[in-house]
Image: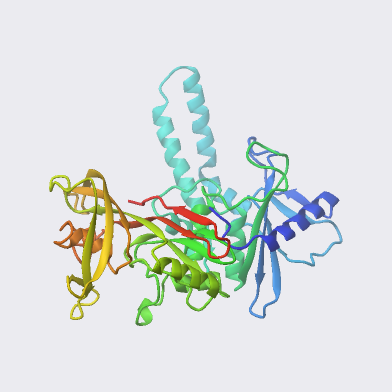
Length: 445
């Protein structure tokens, strides 16, 4: 993933830490014994530059993992920031593991002995796996993360039914953001730099973004948005299904992409949204930080210069209906004023909606009640940007007459379903640099 905030200011602070380490004014102290494979492997140094409610600049500093900490040399006082500790200490983790640790080691010894004797050891292995999982759950239960919206979320809540990789929560980025949000600080710059011997993957003094494996699970939850690209002009995000793009009417419809975006980038323009996705649709959106960027991107959308592609799953077999594998349709729709927000066919007053399609495949899919259905996976390339254009191209009788799975407006959405429509590709010209920007998002269904 990318760094969600500008890096320049934080990188300067990282270099200051390295200079102090090289000069001996800061040392890296070992807190707990490292594993053999990690010994001497180097560490990531992380900095998050923040401001408090009075706009005072505060520099947060940390080191990756739980095995080490940054320590000032004797007699020195930290003048330029705060050393951020781990979210969960090594001692707390050791205590959580202690209950089953002796038995796990005993079983490991038995397994190794039986292996050497070429005897079956599967029963011992099953018990060891169960105990290891129990210990890991105890460790995971220790992790709680402060989020930008003021909430606290546990690791198990964030990752749901997945088993997160070992060390999730111990990287620099989640430590720094957790501290900032728990102390009502506004992040303005963040960076991580590797410190140690060069390896095949990292070089001493070079900056690296937060890792996909661990931080990629946590940071979208902590920030409220998954950030795909960010600079001082624009930000590209991946929207979750079920989240509004912009605020709606009523207090219950204020949580949206824009409101979350403005928490992360409070100095952006008042209306950063350049386009919208339906609440039930997931995928790529671009937002503007400056009015100049907003104006230019809006022009590109209005002039049809922005390229978009969507992946959808339709509740039926288009091949059996003898629908061509590829094609283009032109439909005309307008708002049904008596049944908002539905759109209805109107060849006289309707707005033209041009949609290109390609059938990707016919699949079998289980409904939430475990009944089987045949569905069609399809790639849509809209050449206009009409309201509900792709939902109508699918469901309306002038289109395919087959709704998208989970469409609550033009089809059926059963409990446990979502609209299977995802904005997977976005291409536009950067409003400041003139460079063509292309973004791809893997379909989540």
